[in-house]
Every structure is written in structure tokens, then in C-alpha cells.
Image (cartoon, rainbow, N blue to C red):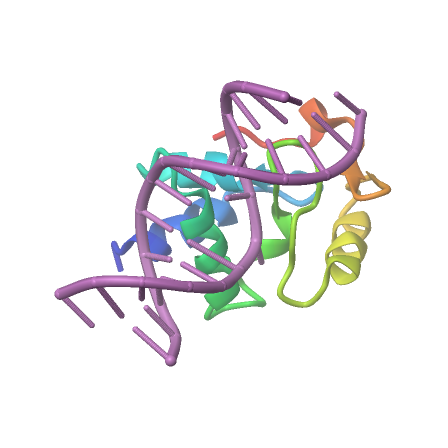
Length: 100
DNA sequence: CGGCTGGCGTCGT
DNA sequence: TACGACGCCAGCC
């Protein structure tokens, strides 16, 4: 507890369904100014895939980015939560993006 | 302990 | 708007 990854996961849990956050925002929220890739690594290593919704983490330009279980699955999961994804791009970006 | 890779970001072309 | 190059931080070999 208290480790970097734990803080990342905890912050990610704050993101409600139907909203998403970005690697940048998440990294910044834990004190890392340029830890976007580091966050990606943590998501990839995600020890609690069910509890931690890594599919709600997308790129800053509105594209979904990658996903350990495939981008298709990521898109499906997001769509199920109400996030509209149009050709690898999230619609209503400012409405969908959750800010800490 | 050194080097490479990766679910990325930002800037320049 | 799309693509390429460089930079960043945390793991893995």
C-alpha cells in the first residue's frame, strides 16, 4: 500500500462508469509529470483485472490506445458502459473525460 | 547494475 | 489531419 501502482489503481477506481481518464492525467494524479508510459506498464501488469478497470484509461488525443486483451475488447467494454467510440475515437470527448 | 521495451505524450514536418 | 522523431518512468532480461 502507498506504492506508486497502488495510488494509480486507487485513482483509476475514482473514474465512474461511462467516463474515462487518460494516461497523462493518471500519471499526473500520482505525481509523475511524464509517467504516461509507466502507467501503461502498470495497467499491463494489473494484478486486479476485475477490480481495476484499465479499459477506462485512454490516450490524450481521444483514441483508445492499447489494451492487454485487445482493442476490440476495450471498445466493447467501454461501449457497454455508455462510452461512444467512433472508429477508435471517443465521441463527446470533453463530456466523457473524467477530471480528477 | 546496464540496456531495451512498452496499453504514451508532445512537437515538428 | 496524419506520420515520424525524441523524451519520460517503471519493469524485465
